[in-house]
Image (cartoon, rainbow, N blue to C red; front, side):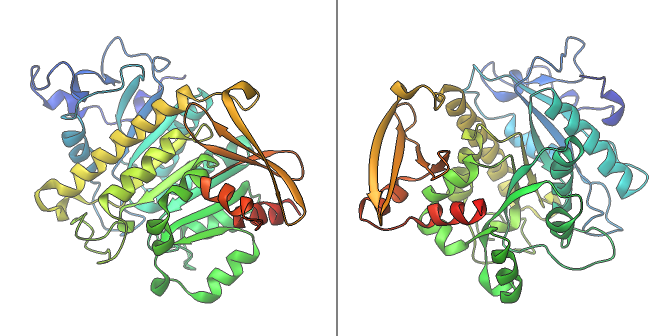
Length: 377
């Protein structure tokens, strides 16, 4: 990787801590830091990048230190994942303009992606998701994107904001969006005609109630994703008190930790961003603590990813042959992780859930099978 030092603020959070601030098994004593002389970008599986840019939400808003508030809680946690190498690159420098900050973040994310590392972004306003997608666009690689948000940010505005960035991501040309999943939207905040239009594009949208009732069905969704963006407003206000623009309804703290663990388990995922956390509104740092737990579970999921067998290693899977409504297909269940895959008529296997297998076993067509078929046409 090229030297990225110039894109980051000169002072790292760790430098403000006392030398004996962390016990040997806490995160703060085990993460590699870009400020260390011995730091090597190649010596990392996951790279943490902070970006406190909020001008996509409010043009007059100052650069935020919220990523460091998350680090304050994260570094106190205990490190259970000795086999995973984590590096913290620090915070992206604020650019003279919003575009400058976005450009710097994009360069850093591209370098991390090209080096085969996973980027973990601590935002910043939600429009920074666009830089996650731009990595694939610049590389001319097709991407499957998943976003957790109570809103669907498709407003029509003159410039890209945290309420309109999806317009560029989903409709911009040339477009490298292979598929889009929206997780935990709240129906009363979504225009029904907009959902109808997006459904015609074969994008998938999962209502909050459906996600909470069958959260295990989100695992195959995230397993297929190349990037995951999490807007903290997806979490109900009582569980994330920094969400002054949030909702009394939403995901619970346990729900979001489960989702981020699923994301960490995905072999396809190369970037994960957590956005819309403003520490100035955080009561007793509760939201920062929740985000740090979400990061912990993402790493925990990554440990599962490293143990999964390849689909070609059939001895590591249990095979189930199922016939439903005149369709003959095969389901695979991993002996290592208990995850499921389903074979489509084109002979490819796609991630699925145990519920999909049960539906097919009852001679019914799984909705996931239908949606995948529609996208193949």
